[in-house]
Image 1 (cartoon, helix red, strand yellow):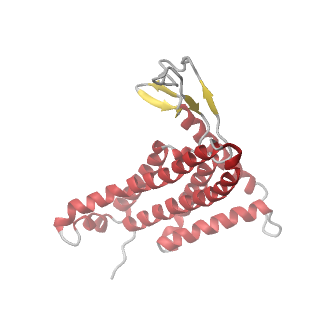
Image 2: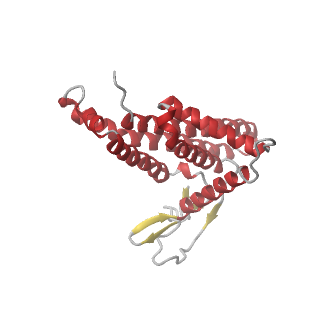
Image 3: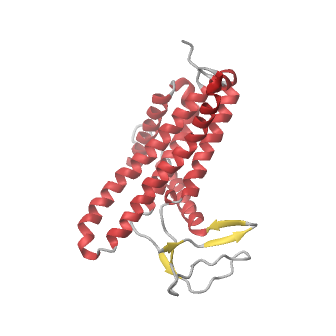
Length: 253
């Protein structure tokens, strides 16, 4: 059984492992991008520069598939940030995990909730410190809420008339259904990403318990997990662009 190190700060329960992994992800993405653009050259681009140019072009194609590129250029940076952050987050839990056991809670920033919960037989549960941030529903929900707020804000700012009117189309009686549809978008974004990554880490933990017998299965699953992590980053990014396009772009028929 793996628990999370949680502290109570200002009435909020804060997962220290989630904060740690978010920090690692942000630093990794920042350092990666800085390395890729450190020595930009048109005539003799480096391999890392070619890689970053390919990523930017890939994101540009994602945006172009959701909306006219002339209107979607401002969102390329958002798409690039999303796909890099989510992909790196998905990958962090694959190579290894850091687990510790604590028998007594330590005092951090005031009152601390026990990092370990005593089981019924008197044993202490293990603390998971290193994991994929996206295997935590609070992280994926945070990303989805950001997209939800952004798409509605942009809809009201750039397409207010048609954005508000779509709630009563094709008939006013559809207002409740259209509101539910809008609220369901961030829920679907958060749960889809969380469920796929969390399930993958659970399966990795199960395979590890098989010992040396599970080595072939572990190698196969690690490769498949890279594909799943990349796919989920792509899906989250393209759906975000589609949702933004739906609220901000109005096509005259």
